[in-house]
Image (cartoon, rainbow, N blue to C red; front, side, top):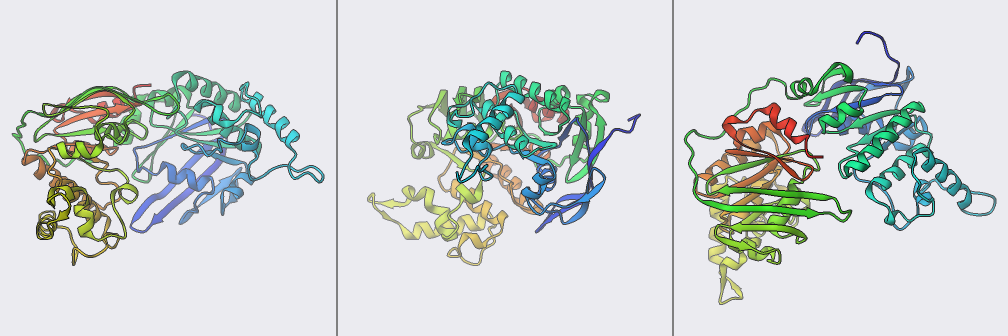
Length: 506
């Protein structure tokens, strides 16, 4: 970069250490005044952690921040807001039963005389803020009546009400239509003209090239590169994001597959805001085949799995398990009995019963297979199934009666997979199967997936980790913004092409 631009905020040597994880490793980061500062990296690169440090959500393990050249530290978000730093998170934090003005001033209401809240004053300031954002929205309008894009403008207004000089936007377009994205971009450009500095996190490469002035790339918790957007292109971004680490493969050559165990035709699902989260998706999975779905946050992978398993019933399209059609009304339990099983993305929230034993967690989804006369459980068969599964999956536990919450993350994940296997599936769905487990446990899970596929089980798994998708997939699907943007054999897949496909579809 030829000239020296004005830096409003500088992070120097920022590290963030969690138990067993170094999320940020000695990161230097510059934020340029009055510009759109884009930050990008694969999931797990450290983007959100760094932004949480800048916004006072978390305190770094080590490092220093300079604001306008002066050292600063933030104990909480209030400290950061007092210094002019605001953040709009991807998950909007609004109370839908309150109006626009009440949301903007929630928790920091204005008072006038003996009245507890100066509603007229708040509404006047709210109207000025919405006018500044070019939004013809009444301060008295209930937030519940607003579209997602309008609600996001209310979140931005909240930050501006606290006199934010630096505004952090985390994945701001993930739930917006193309029209709403254009409105947001217009607002961002107007704010920068007014002197507001924007930090913009997104995975959508073309979007970043459109709105960004400067770009910073993180990789594996470290600073990787910085450049003016006008001086680089999308291939440069992809190269810097991926690096040159070799990809390990867990697949043996000469793998063969049987007939389709899953056929999906034109599946479409729309969320409460009317935005398609799964958009006309069609594909198949063959017996013994491992099909990986690569996509970034908000791509629609989890929503697709919910449609397949029937936990989301509001979808259009057709699904077949083998030769059997699966109607939209078919309950999840019936789909499991037909041979479909899911290992969910959030293991702790929806995957385990933490206070129950390993044995209970293993068998609870397949009790129907061991019922005698329709009402009593055959205990000896149950104990044998538990012992066999623990042995086959190498689950490290002293006794099946131990509470599952006492196990490591990797062993908990093996239990969840084992529970699915006890339903005798023809198709195994794995949503982010390696999330929250260490490197050694990841290898165990991959080897397990390959072994199961060799027994003829079709496997459909999702991940936002590019190296994982390359390591264990026979075929790779890419989703972006609910759409299927690529369907390629592993041998012909190129990492750069997959990253580019994951940024399309909006």
